[in-house]
Image (cartoon, rainbow, N blue to C red; front, side):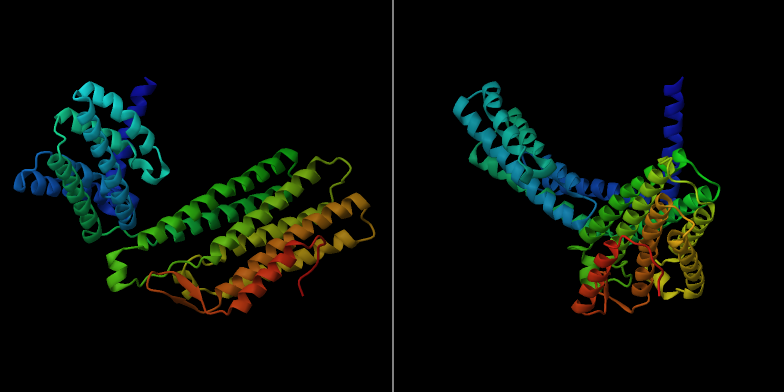
Amino acid sequence: MRGWQGTVQEIHCARAAALRALRERGAERVQAIQALKAAAAAVLAWSIAGWWWEAPMAMMAPWSAVLIVRATVYQSVRCAGQQFLAIALGTVAAAGAGTLTGGTLAAMALALPLTALVGSHPKFGEYGLSASATAVFVLTYGSYSGADIGHRLVESLVGSVIGILVNALVLPPLDLRQVEQSLDHMRRRTAELLSTIAAGAGHGGGVHAAKQWHEESRRLGSALTALRDARHRTGESCRLNPVLLVHGSREALPAQWWDEHWERLAEHVRALTGTLVHVAAEPRVPPHLPAVAELAGILAAASRLCELEPVSPREQDHYDGRDFEEARRTAWKAHARLTAYAAGAATDCAGAAAIGALSSHARLLLEELDHARRRAREPQSADRHGTGTRRRSTQDAAGDRTTLTRLSRRNRGGTRP
């Protein structure tokens, strides 16, 4: 019964994906276009190699073409080279084994271990198996003379060239929104986590709640990984893309430093939640309700600051800093009061140390948000590949890195001047 329900659910998901591909631009439509392009490349390769040329092993052309239509033009070019080398290896190995043994079975026993071993080399990528598959095809057909070897290589080369041309000239794949979507996802997850911590701390969350917050902060690493992957895929889709090479791009990518900013911010949140776990689990540290309330105020304001941060050049063009400045003032005033509790005479040593550690982490969090706000207000320019660059000197960039390093080494809380 469960298997049937799962099948029905998969059918509904496939139907929903098909409808999204028809109605809106997105990953489903891109996949559908690439699938149609791969099929068209295979048909075109067969029509040239099999119908027009009447090659003796024309199936090598559509087989190569359908595998070459990849997610980016650069991948198509790189994979074409890997596949051609693998096919050449399999063809030559099969021809040599067939000539030496004179029988199909003995030739397979000699050629397949060699092609499987050499094809596993990382240089062949995922196309190493093509060497063994080609050897099987060649030995099964039983034709491995010099002319036959040349036909196999030319047919596979024709298919690879057709696959590259179809992928490059027919709606070449280019997605400049992946980085922006990943940054927006990172922003929402961080803001939601800070808001959750603020609400829980305000209501006296215990050890279990603190551990949950810390575990969720560690899960931000998966969002960072997705962000790095999106940056890599987008940069790869810009390489050898004829649309960008000829016309350029009117759409700018979020600058690289945003990735580093959210990575540092995730580290500060993880350190803060780790301290909350330690404080909640330590029976010698009494709860200081006013200090906890101020920490909740800081994190609530920090959550609002994350929501207001622009993550794309379009958002930066419409960036209004008034709400940001109001949330920023609220956060720093609450931080000043929290720091005062740590330095107060009515607080014992254990409580002062705990509050001081929380104050220090909160300060680093707010400093990072302030740093991002300053950089977001600077003018940007975009290159023809859509990557944003800052009009800053090398000395200014080095100065920012030095400032962040110093901030990360501070162990004592304080108020921002």
